[in-house]
Image (cartoon, rainbow, N blue to C red; front, side, top):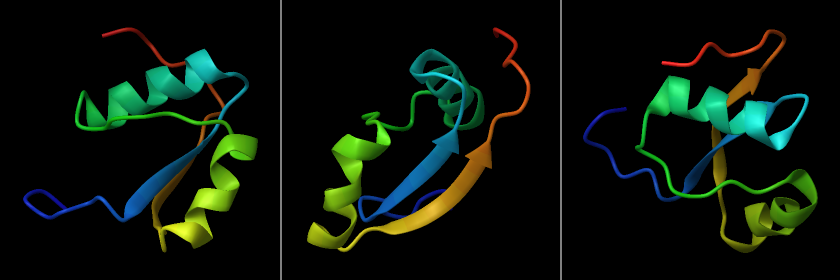
Length: 66
């Protein structure tokens, strides 16, 4: 989706903890994202801001450092 505005999209990452989720996001999108939230913090924002899920990542294995 390079070159497109993505401000109405979000990526869901299912991981064992927040650090693994952040590592997964950096591995996939480098520094082209802005915030991370846990499910409880973010769930109400989906409807409020009319957001659409761009991708769902289920992290089964540890992410290797770059």
